[in-house]
Amino acid sequence: DIQMTQSPSSLSASVGDRVTITCRTSQSVTKYLNWYQQKPQRAPKLLISATSNLQNGVPSRFSGSGAGTVFTLTISSLQPEDFATYFCQQTSTMPLTFGGGTKLEIK
Amino acid sequence: VQLQESGPGLVKPSETLSLICTVSTGSFTNYYWSWIRQPPGKGLEWIGYIHHSGNTKYNPALKSRVTMSVDTSKRQVSLRLRSVTTADTALYFCASGSGGTYDFDYWGQGSLVTVSS
Image 1 (cartoon, rainbow over the protein chains, first blue to last red):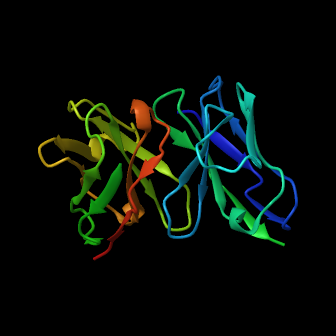
Image 2 (cartoon, rainbow over the protein chains, first blue to last red):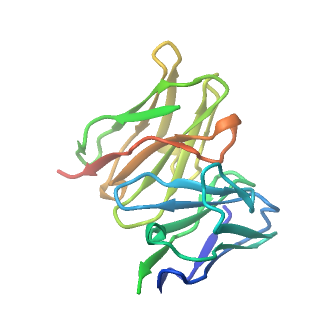
């Protein structure tokens, strides 16, 4: 299985901050890396697919980059509604696997 | 596409967990319907998928205990997980990706299953 390591596991930030979350994979997933946002008691929401494809309706302050084994999710200017947990997922190789999550909290 | 999970919220150890996902609107064919679970306060684990044709793919970590099936007339997919333990306590989601992908943009609300005697 491809192991997914997210860092940091938690992050405190303020409204307006720029934040970056990193996802590292144990082997190359080429570009097949997705990002999800999850709020408490809710299902995850797909934000970005295939490294950098922003889903319809997702604000442009979210962006993704990377290739191979290192990927990043960047939020350019945090808004109150962005405080949530973020997960990466690889779809390159079965079984599909997810990162452990990054909890973004208000400072 | 709207998904809704249903099933017992409490299962005894060693018994079988059974859940159903009903696809109430949108297309049912040409999708890979996945089950994903999330233990309380933890991350996401992909359990496997079933295609509307009946083709399945399971996570090797759970393969020996998992069976998925599909009923196209009812627009339902089901999950059975045998010989459960407390480690199987989790929020169980059904999910799918538009265009037949594994990019999950359709999710149910989740069904909490607790394994306890």
